Image 1 (cartoon, rainbow, N blue to C red):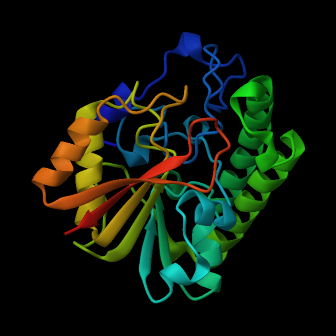
Image 2: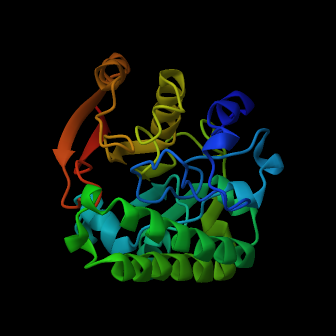
Length: 275
């Protein structure tokens, strides 16, 4: 994010949890979000080098969750380059690379040491599980079987991500949306989970438009964005405006159902494709 967007993303201190320094996204408003990951909400002002670790939420999903969220089969991405942005502690890149998919993750959090991110991630997982458990009826627990199942999956994603970061740091690129340090059409496919639309109360329409344009700039074929709702399961209010923007740029846009629903109502994705 730019300095201006980082400022807009700042959550008021009075809304923050009494647990100082965790920035786990567990505010007094009881937001119905599962657990933000990586740069979904950057709670600091300034450019990437100014971000403090305590203001980063480092939680992510597993490779298998990504396949379901984005309605992908293991063979769909063979021979293609893939960007995960924001990647957070999602293990998609680590697992994809193991099976021969050329995947890269980008996130504001990747400027920090993997060991520090792992420690922060474990704290964030604990807070997130407590938060989601307190809002139980807003989630479909058959996805994980209960809070401990959720904790296990989030820990699995974190561990795999950190191990891969330590062994292959070049796969994890520090970046501050809406600007990415990649060449035009560098990736065949871009996957973007739990960022755009989820925080439409903090990130304005201009930021959404700029970010979609930047994601498309670095993408050759298509972008998949999941989900299409905010933390309270309300559909993004400016979706039609964004779809018009896509059409004006010559991109086709289609809303498709997802095979994944943990947060109730978060069960579809937007697919933007170059015509």
